[in-house]
Length: 171
Ligand SMILES: Cc1cc2nc3c(=O)[nH]c(=O)nc-3n(C[C@H](O)[C@H](O)[C@H](O)COP(=O)(O)O)c2cc1C
Image 1 (cartoon, protein in one colour):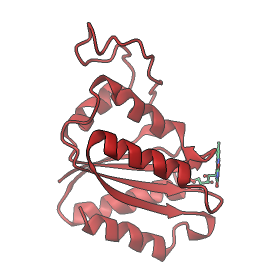
Image 2 (tube, protein in one colour):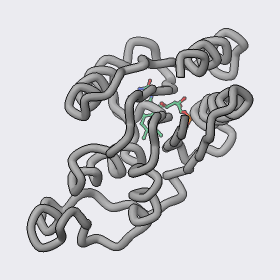
Image 3 (cartoon, protein in one colour):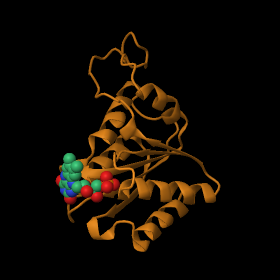
Image 4 (tube, protein in one colour):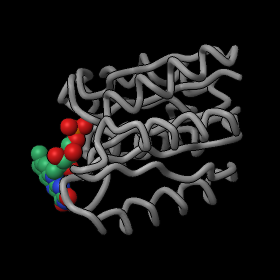
C-alpha cells in the first residue's frame, strides 16, 4: 500500500521521529511504498477559511506554501500515519496545520486507514488528541488503526517498538 507518514516533531532525535522511522522501516520491509515527510521543516500555515477553494479555486487552496508539496502525496496515499508530540494536551500545531488545510478537498481521496503515533512527557494526556483523531477518521470515512503512545519512560523502548511493528502488520 502507499503509506504517507507525516512526522510533526521538530526534535530530530526525539521519540516521535524515532517511532515514525520505525514505522517506515517496518512497512518498507513488508513491501509497502512509504513516504515520510518531516512537516516540522515545512512552512504550512493555518487555513484562512476564505472559501476560495470551495468557490473560484475549484478545490485548490489560495495559499501557495509548502502544503502544495503535500497535496499530491495526500491525494495518492492509501494509508496516512500521523506522528506527533503532545503539546498542551493535543496534537502539535505542525500536524494540525496540514490536516486542517485538507479542507479544500474535504478528505484525502484514497486513504483507507489512518494510524496515530504520539509522544508526551506525562501519562494520561492523550484523550483530546485521541478523540480528535477518532473524529477525523469518522469524518473522512477511514479505518481508525488506533494509536501508539509513548510517555517519557516508554520512549525508544523495545516495548514501544513492538507496538509500532504490530500496527504495521495490520496494514
Ligand atoms: C510546547 C510544548 C508543549 C508540551 N505540552 C505537553 C503536554 O501538554 N503534556 C505532556 O505530557 N507533555 C508536553 N510536552 C512535552 C512533549 O510532549 C514531550 O517532551 C514529547 O516526548 C516530545 O516528543 P519529541 O521528543 O518526539 O518531540 C510539551 C512540549 C512542548 C515543547
